[in-house]
Length: 255
Image (cartoon, rainbow, N blue to C red; front, side):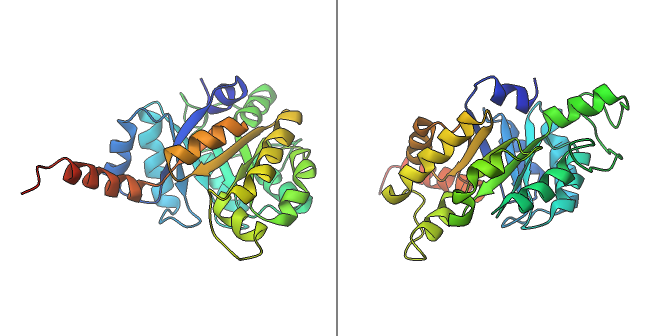
């Protein structure tokens, strides 16, 4: 079942977050219960070569691949889809104009202007297909998440969600906390942002769209799930490594 069908079917999915480009690190992540991992091109080390390689590893393991592209790099959104990614998260989508540009790169006509030329198609095939029904199915199963990170984006959330080709929103709570506090703090767990985060999730639900968010730890993830978020990215792979080592050290008998 595709990532899109699972999320639209009401599942809450917890995603890994990948900054490291090493294939062995991704193979290890694929041995965990995580059903999906997001490859970060904005602040992580990923490039097109690592997206190709790691997406292949995830698909072979039956996992769902997602990518966050750098700011404004909608060309990379189309590239990631050609490589077999199921969802793309685009940062700093602040208005309808941004959302339309993103949607055009994500969807085939008549919704968008994505160019045909898949390296990998839908799970189970490599570049196969060609009918209009196939194009409509691909449009439906490739998810375009617009990031809500600023006050401007928050004020235009309903319009962004209403943009044809946008499947949902994804909140970056750290950047949102910076914007909400006018630069006074960076705190993804701030009480000050709970009310607007709640409203974002409600607007997505009312629009019949999806909503996702990043959560640095389980406590914050539980809170965001309670607000209605259904695609929740947990921490980052570098933090997983540190936490694993620390857990072993904490279990050692002290001399």
